[in-house]
Length: 347
Image 1 (cartoon, rainbow, N blue to C red):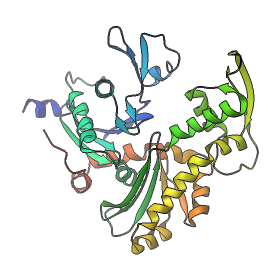
Image 2: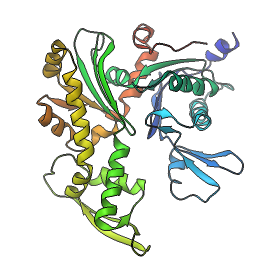
Image 3: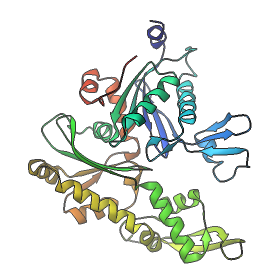
Image 4: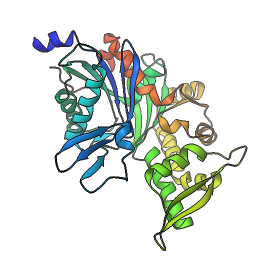
């Protein structure tokens, strides 16, 4: 009763709890938070020093008693307490301008397809401990399809490839459910690791995650570019331990990432092989939709199209598809009831 009363003064939230970044949207304002899933913790006092953008700036630069933690690994919670504190921070931030003293919102959260019951319970508990009054879990690929305004409840196949930070999810959706799917622990973070490894082997330079991500964003591509690009990189010389700089070009970055991209394409083909023929003909007709931050990699859509012989298009603003889909569900209870992940419990 008390929760319901507080709920009347709270803003219902849609949350995309991602490995790399967390996005939060409300019904009235749309997406209001888009920050890295990073929390800086003082190990001496167990105090949260920074969350999101501020905490990301500290990665790789902290003294021994401060740790910049990424509480989600491969789309699932690896550090429950830190995730709870991060969610509480975001919920309080949303309500900071309102008069709600104790926010008790309804929350729709995106979860990976291969999540276990224990991991699902961890997401629910973290959200409830952070202040949510009701928690609805929705598969991320389903939320991405809804956010892209695809006809998910019709007897027509929709193939969504969601390339996130920690995982790539390939799913075929029809009649409001996932028919066939594959999920793999290869996505944006793995591409960064590929670049770190390549620079280490080719240039004898050790670079950090943020430098590798910067290289991927600036000159990374899946297919050859019309005009060659290059950039200067700097890190620690592995031979003498001193700072060292070098120049890397787009073809070297492409070579570094090629194996991971090939594995993603191979899994798309394997998913198509296990899809019923009627649905495959729909996919051939309507094409494959790319969502997630990885969809922004130059030429990835062309590379997948060439390998599968199926048209591929990148969703509008692929980074926000999941949170937009979850936001649509907040205002459409009938659709929410059809697609909500089973096994969730309401307060």
